[in-house]
Length: 475
Image (cartoon, rainbow, N blue to C red; front, top):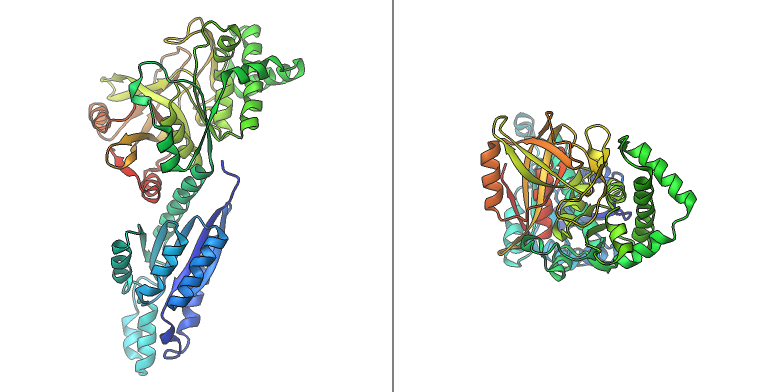
């Protein structure tokens, strides 16, 4: 995952003319802002406090501060009524996604206590402390006319639901920031004939901000040739620790996979890769064919260490896997291959890399005499995703919004799987097997997707919103 902390800007919005009219109001609102800031701080999040913005001049200054502090997202806490000209200069200069916080200090005004106040000025001051909802339409109007996207959280300052929503926005902002910092390696070429996975990588950089690095199989093969005996022995030991290596796996094949795995680690470090998509036949070149037919264990280890690896040169799915990884959900390479109509569920899996950190039990390693549809033979992984709630994510090329996130929530369930040296899982969806497959296909995704543990559709919807791309949830 990205080593850089998320930098969240936080400011309150108020009206300077109130401070001299209503004693204690400014201090009270500062208190709410301080209270929010304290709860916003968490591991991996730095809060840049901009104070209480109450004039147009202060708004411009805060906007410049946002630039200097290199913030990733701006939380704009509407503490009381404020003029829209205290918002526009700030967000124009900040140039980052804006989350408008329409948060009251309590669920409702204490009407009885309020109406007993004899001092009419004090009554107005109390009312203004609950007045966060009042200026939001004014601000929304101006931001819409300025074509500046904004997002809202409406609720109560200390309400658990409010902070669940804030946590999702922070996670979505982290995904956006991580992708913008990511280096996506592309090694080899597309699987010939798979038109659905072919992607405009320039558009990937434009929309997601990720750097695309074209890397060479020949370089990986050269690194493999340099791996020494001690590194080989250590990596074979790693395999026995990380996997359930089956008795029929030959030592020669384990050493071959270990050599490529060690080389992959060096390769990824050399190019500072955050994710990798690959496919290469290696036909006619013995060294490259050896490398590409012994890559599965190494790519599975990398995926579990937050460097997701997608086979078949599936660029969009490398992005989907990285997004799920950022959310702590895993993100294993998969596709559906059959339907069990008796149990009303969908069978999904894939040959090649598996996310061993989200496996149900220890991932098995099996030898294959042939890689179906691919050159070579060697060791492969067999696993099911952990039983329980799961989320599927596909990054889909979309004619209207360039890309969109296609999401489904379901459950991975226990039961028989095919023991063929592939990742295999049984998934049940609220729409049923037929309903899910029809709804998913109707959105036009490529045939691969990423599966992660837990239900994270709410955060993925916010991620799409922050990136300005489309979002569809089918179940």
